Length: 227
Image 1 (cartoon, rainbow, N blue to C red):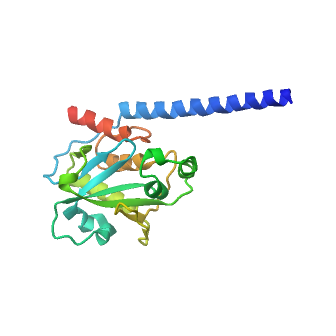
Image 2 (cartoon, helix red, strand yellow; image 1 turned 45 degrees about the vertical axis):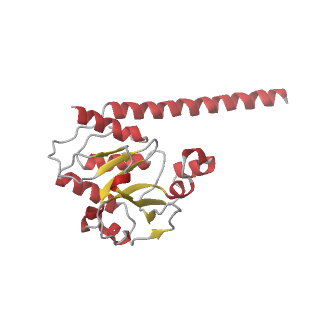
Image 3 (cartoon, rainbow, N blue to C red; image 1 turned 180 degrees about the horizontal axis):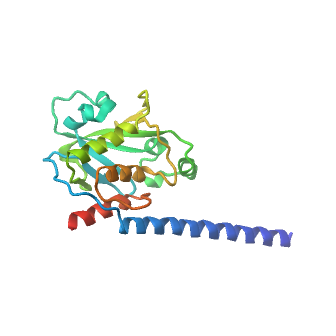
């Protein structure tokens, strides 16, 4: 029995060591990717109101002026917006694991089974669409310095992420609308990787190799703004 327990403990220590080393390597790669980002291209920003990037502690969204989100540029999203006469709104658009969106309002409520299911790509993914008044925009939202080509690239990325035919999913208590996505969530393709892909297509700098964290998107943009 003692020999069996010793072998089991030794195997457990090896497994834990591998997990820790892999985790440290993953985070280190993300840090290096953000510290040495891709190059953007010179752009002459459009006049306001323009698309913004909203980066919380763990997630990133695009904030699109309501009038722009209603245009054909954003495809089927316009069909799922309320018919408001007042355009003084932004539409928050983000991509991610559907169960994360609807079952984990705060990180403190994240359960191991949900995390493992998401990181292994077992759940549906969706675009979350939520209306917010301009006056109540979070202070962590910043305008992206985009020209028309860059703006169109982000809109195209969003359109290309919506499943065809368009499939609305059940909403949440916070008033968000969800459209089923054709993409898969995983450890190497998180919500922030999705945002980073759009930023890269738009011609702005972003993390070079992987972008699993919110800082993977924000650090390169902040560095670019300070140049």
